[in-house]
Image (cartoon, rainbow, N blue to C red; front, side, top):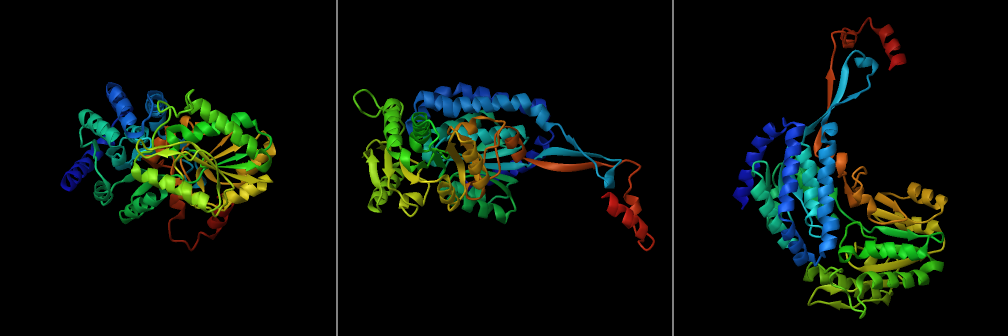
Length: 466
């Protein structure tokens, strides 16, 4: 495998020089080809995601397939505009010149994808990389092996490996890939592994995009419509059984609302995810990816209770089918073990506050999260949260939906990531913005050539103009 990877990398290094010259029409043709290839294996994708995560057909369609199709269509619609050089303003130093920004492909790019949305989160950056004119090497997660197999087959059949290649395998394959001097690396996964990727990239001065995670808070103040809020948080928390990088990790709520919120949250969850007999509806509710993650989550819940949290609802689990029922923890403190790591599962801690400033202080004491959710109809509170906190993205009075708009950048900040994707932000992410000056025959730079002894007056004039 190691020699195969290196051989493909060398071939892509050669081919990237030709690929960088491709026109809008050629890149659009490739995007359309990718879409047709995905459509041809739709049933395999549904089956693979059911196998890996017990995703329902509807959830797979909405969060994986339709999302991908929409991103391809958006890129096709706007690619000509994105590729067009942008003319920018002049300064006194180049007043007679033409100044433009050209978007050139970065070259050979590596995309390492996670297991939680194993199709969407490899296809989304791939779409941007193709649109920008790059060669790509893909590494799907071995933890979602059924989906990885479908992706490998799809890519192998549709693309020449000197342009796009896919490699299945464990961490050993990732290690071999990360030793290569890529022009760009796009990684989605945990903060811990993100640091490893960044260290590997630094050895070759490779630029990186890191989509990580963190503990995304949901803040609920006394002006919100609590019943609607509870339903939205329940959906955002439990889609994909909580294994979503922008899921509400925990709730910060006005202390006067806690009891009612728990009641409404339970009602919402029972309506959405349980059947009439009071059993979890496995056709709508996913499973935990594997035994290791299952044990981590159940241990985390036990440790939280041992440290003083109270299990307000749920707590049941079934290791045989890797199912953890929706659970609520209250009496949670900042020091509780469950507040020291991203949960990435269907467990919801609740922390109360008296004033919104307490919630702000709590958030700012932690690493910056990938998302932040505020439920408030108070404009002052909205502005206060926006100006006093930092996160990758924000939704006010909803959850998750910011990821669905390709006109918005999606990405983290500091420990929750770096760089943005989707739409033009993804295109730019896989492009180098190249400054180009077309100088005219009337260029003024000759006036600053040496010798300098008699140019004191010119210096005073330049100081006023520049």
